[in-house]
Length: 133
Image (cartoon, rainbow, N blue to C red):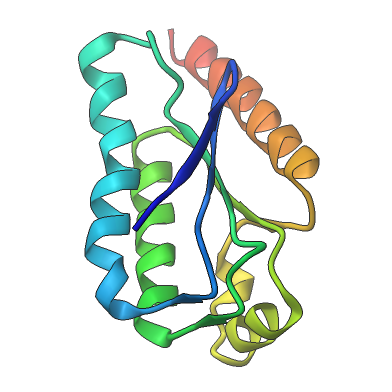
C-alpha cells in the first residue's frame, strides 16, 4: 500500500489511498503508523510523532480495519502522542457511527482542524509535564 506523507513541524499528515480500507491492509498500516512512535523514542524529538490520518479517498472500510484504527489511536495516546483522523467520506462516517466507533475516535472535518487539535494536545502535554516537575 502506498502512503502519502507530508511532514510538518509537530506532525505527519498521512493520506491513505482509496477506495477501500480492509482487514488485509491493517497489518501494513499498523506497522507503518506505529513506526513513528518508535522513531521518536530513538531520536529524542528529532522528528514529530503526532499523526493526522487523511481518509478522503477511502469510500469503504470494514469493521476489522476500523477497530484497528481505534487501537492505533489508543497506542498513540498511551505514548503521549496525538492521532487524529480527518476528511471522512459520509459513507465511512456513517459506518463508523453505526458501529459505535466514531464516538471514540478523534475525528475532524479538515486537516487544519486536525492540526489545531494536535497543537492543543501538545500544549496540554507540556503543561501537564510542567506540573509533574
